[in-house]
Length: 158
Length: 119
Image 1 (cartoon, rainbow over the protein chains, first blue to last red):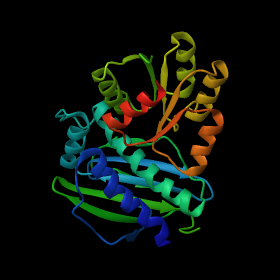
Image 2 (cartoon, rainbow over the protein chains, first blue to last red):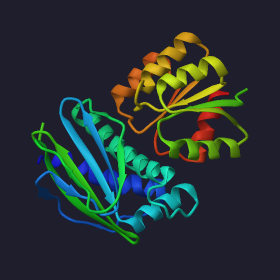
Image 3 (cartoon, rainbow over the protein chains, first blue to last red):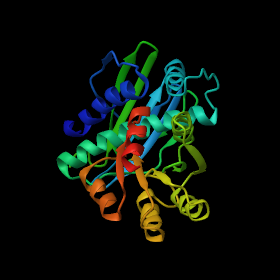
Image 4 (tube, helix red, strand yellow):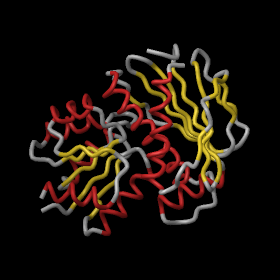
């Protein structure tokens, strides 16, 4: 995949997670190409976007990291990973990261990308599959656990 | 003077966080709308002093909702609060007459400063 499409999402993940929650990503893996299938580990959110190209962005947080994120957002401890407000917080994190990355891509490459409302789901072992989309996955580490980000664009380039 | 605020966003978390910020700074949240269509209807019935409007929402997006609100009342005050902040979308919002454009994430200072600019 065109690396110009990957870097903004990694940068936005690092920056928006820090801005929204104060949680720092301490390390990231190299982007790994995958088959377009993604298996969740805890709480996940997917968002699609379209414009001059089409794509999707998915975040998947370990349960401990998801709880830490929501605690920072709300000031409260929440244990129920299926709580409506809890899931909404993860969804909003995804929305903000993808929005930030797409803002950069739009201003830099005039892609006119527009987001759809995100979806969010809770549970490990859920397989999310996208055909016809080339995707990469990056593992991000924090003191609370792991976050996977999965970036996909139809055609893999623009 | 701005007192009564309408929040239009499809995210319960944004309603939760923004309401806390507004109420702790002395503003009254008169209603929560979860999409642009609800937002327009509530604006018509409640006549808030200020509207916080997201863009990406189901049923009706925030740009369309802001346009309809401005058509109903040219003196209405609308602050766009959205994850997308590229030049093209800012220009679209400006053409509609949106008063202030704020990119998420937000904090208390950002919100209170924006409202102060509208007073």
